[in-house]
Image 1 (cartoon, one colour):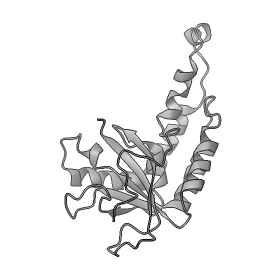
Image 2: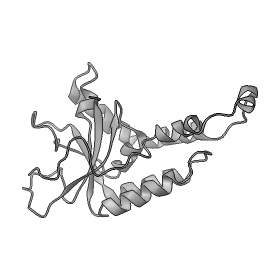
Image 3: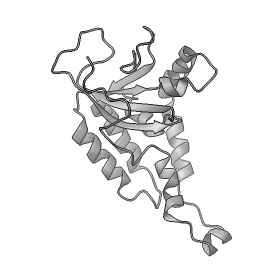
Image 4: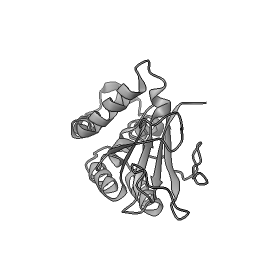
Length: 192
């Protein structure tokens, strides 16, 4: 089994100690093996706050991050609109359509990172603190990613041997696009 980062949406503020009601819901959005992709981080970057895990009950310390859905989706739309890459195609539109259909503007995203943090030797609390800090500096990473995705003049070998569609799409997939699903490995719909 791959260690994954998980992205959920909730109808309640997960960073509070308020008891959940039967009307509160948690739904899957996406999962990613062995990393926390940029798209997940952009989505939780709108007013990010620490929260306890919805998956793991290992302790009182936060290992998840929550952010507001509406502003997170707007920030992702702005990022996707700036991508100049020949393989982007409908990936951006598909992502925004899925997110708008599966979230509420006043809902929250929850990014579960514990499995990713467990792969590193550094203490989980230290990694969590670094991840929260990185969210405050996300614009620098976004600009570097956009520069890396900008088209370049093909070299001789790229002109002779045309790249496959899969290799053209690889940089877009690495952002965390294309893997939207409300069914994740850790299903939280029935947890209280």
